[in-house]
Image (cartoon, rainbow, N blue to C red; front, side, top):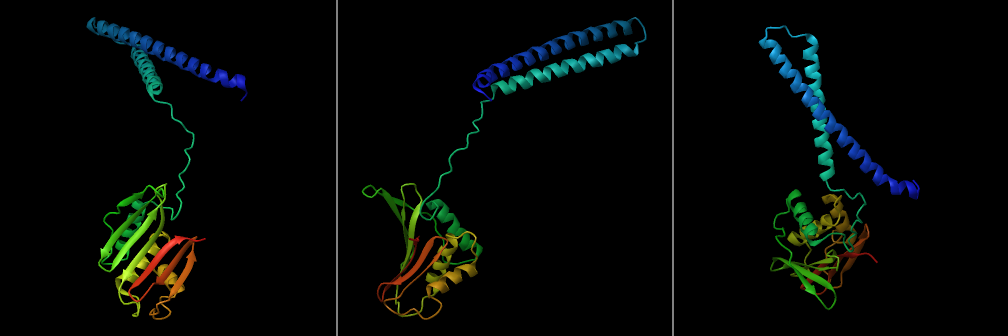
Length: 247
């Protein structure tokens, strides 16, 4: 379509709309007047005792149909003219950075995994974000119990940059219980197409299921789908599991 055509398209469209409006209005008025005229004529003919010709009934019905077509067309054009014009320009899709989910999405996916696999003792009620004006980011924390807590950082686009699960207790004993269950839940949360078996595979790759994790210098990691899953023992009382963007 050239520039001249583009300039005349709105005018042509408007002209067509006005022409149709005039046509339907004419059909409605003509059909209504003719219908009322035939009805009056039929009534007078019946009062005189005359028999109604078939053509009168046919013409009366036809005029009524014409009036209905005109009325329908008028209402349709009027409705279309009052509707706002829809902008079909595709809006840019927001691409979240980091773990590609907001705190609300993270909470919903986490609780969804808890409910699906009946991981008792774990659920997140609310994640409160604390802004950090100096760094332009935010942080959040959720305490499951006295020995287990979840912390994370949020980017400027409100997406989660990383999460870290911290546990206190004797690291010389094998990792298990609610801590291991929480680790599996976090893996499921960051991979929506994973099953619990996939989560166990990730934990196996890290090294938590190969041997008893009872050394103070243990540091195991694996990368899946652009994310790094790392388990680290800091000392005999603290261990962490964190999920970050793989470098």
